[in-house]
Length: 382
Image (cartoon, rainbow, N blue to C red; front, side):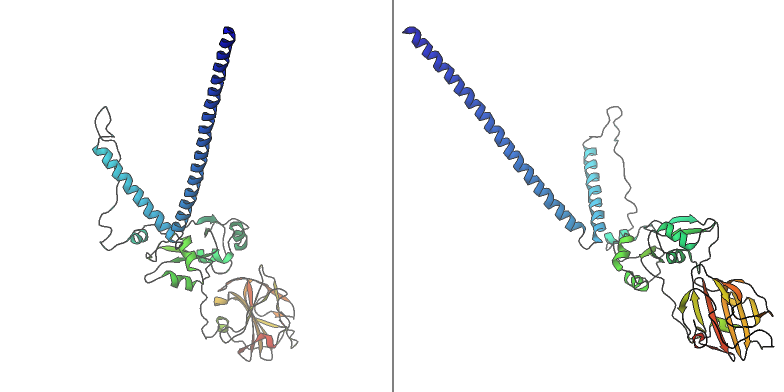
């Protein structure tokens, strides 16, 4: 009986120990579970707060678009001021004092000329007063043998006009060894002059005001004389036509002396191109343009009375067809005939070019009747 009682007490002790261990494990598991739950809740809260912070920063930085740069600048100034204040305090507390010589080791910083701003100046004035003339990158390219404006433009992904405007090129003529400035995008470079405004510049080049702000990193409407602005997708304004005698009208008048093979009717003076400039009071003929050019032929038989360089028309040819008619072929790159030579209808006389005052490869074709320039379309099927 006594032995049974002893075994019973031992069994109870084992059961109590097992219950204690089970309760201990349950307690530890519950605490771990709470830790996981709290950690997950903290992670979710932190994620939401970061998202809110990000949204707040995005709204702040992109409020007014160009204000992004002003905000960034102000934040940088604040951060620098804080760093200087902390370093000054640390210096007073000797936190940077080396053990060997006792000399302060923190660096000093120059804040520039204290007289730069007057009491009414703003942060925008600081930005506008920078010494950078350009806020965009320009590449340099040296013309190689076989290059032309079209191939160079294709190589850099810009238009041929962009290269012309940036380098003051008229027409298509470039030479080997010539150094060209290549803009990063299509557009125009505008040197700022006294009285210029962003709105006026945008209107002049038919461009976007905001694009000018963005590409040039402008932060205000204050411009600096001499500063160069890149006008994205801007186009150089064309001069307004002035009612005056055309350049080709300065060609001398000649008297037909006989000879030639005139038929009394005209043919198209070239087998390529399209009309890009029509007859008008200030343009005594039509312009037929073709990239690369083609052969020019006599519109009718007659006598060559001019075959040489003549003023702004470059290499010109004039043919007298008799009966008061003359035809003019200007801006040729080559001339195949000479003065006094008789030519027949359709005979090659030259090659289309861009000599003289020309903005591209084309033929200026004019018809003169009784000493007056007339519309070629009234006599020639172009």
